[in-house]
Amino acid sequence: MLPLLLPIGALLAGIALMLTGTGLLNTLLALRGSVEGFSDQTLGLIGSAYFVGFFAGTFVAPPLIRRMGHVRAFAFFGAATAACVLAHALLAEAWFWMLLRVITGIALVGFYTVIESWLNSQAPGERRGQIFAIYMAVNLFALAGAQQFLHLAAPAAFTLFAVAAISVMLALMPVMATRLPPPPLTDTPRLPIRRLWEAAPVAIGGALASGLAMGAFWGLGAVYAGRIGLPADGVATFISLTILAGALLQWPIGRLSDSMDRRYALALVAAVAAAGGVMMAILGNFGLAVLVGCAIFGAAAFAVYPVVVAHLIDHLHHDEILSGNAGLLLVHGAAAAVGPALAGVLMDWIGPAALPLYFAAMFAPAAAFALLQARRGADEIVDDPAQFMPMLRTSPTVLEMMNPPEAAPPEAPAATHAD
Image (tube, rainbow, N blue to C red):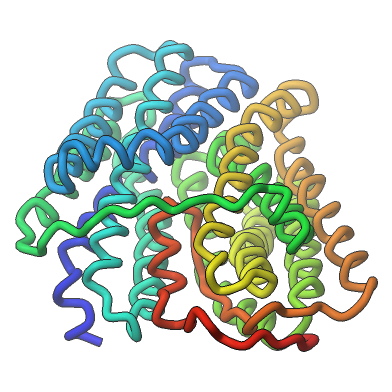
């Protein structure tokens, strides 16, 4: 394992530091926004602005990287992110924060694209799956660990913004110092959404539900925790536990999904995520008891999107996998941009319990739809069954690492079999 990690250690250190800074900022903005008197609807719009930027970044970032080169683009995106982190503390106005979040979203896509294209070029074909799993673990644990910096100072102070900016700037150092040759950057075409629906309607439904729910979690999860009375360290525990539960349960859930009709697996995890949302709404009145509900929710909700990706791969030919997953990212990203704004409106109308109930309202129909589709008949796999891979939504570039061309010969004979 050590020989595998040494060449890419600088890249993993860079992404870990970057996500520590931006993960801390994401929660900090929710807490600081509450201190500034922002309504839940406004905080939801601020959360949506980030995903609007992330969505736009998938189109904007690649041309910028080609123009500047990987190293300079990396420094450019890192500097933009650090500047945005600090600018939040200078002017606490909702419109200004929304603008900063759009810029941050674009910059993070650029950052992901540089790192992931470098990892793709450095990973041997037969080891890409292992590197992908390590990379996703670094993502999840960096996001969870970032929350613990909330113990250092109050959200109203400048300290936490400085810590987040320092972490972002430190992320530049290991990558700028690397002697790895810059990789080529390739375009990943997207299959039309209609083609994806024809191939795997359950995948489209699951991606929509996951985007709507998880976008709201990232944008408003900390707001909810603060609104039910948890202190800053309680909010940190709430977010960290949700993420860690999702990280630790993805492998066993993935093994389960590989051994059965994946539509039943998706129905199961979506139903458990919905149940976790209901439990959060009920236990939110009992202080730290809400952590039970958030752990159940996180364990299932973080597995929905990777199950959806595996289900889609089951129903695409080998030469369609990259473009199909890029199209699915588009669906998920558009839904994530809508989710925080929609959930913020509901929280303004109903109160904090509206957020976990919103989670349940997103995942329950996805579970029902997957179950209905599963009962229609056997699930026909186009070429070969997919292998579940734990993952977060990052940039389309990561799809090349998840689905290396070496793993699938282009002229593989078609086979049809049921899970």
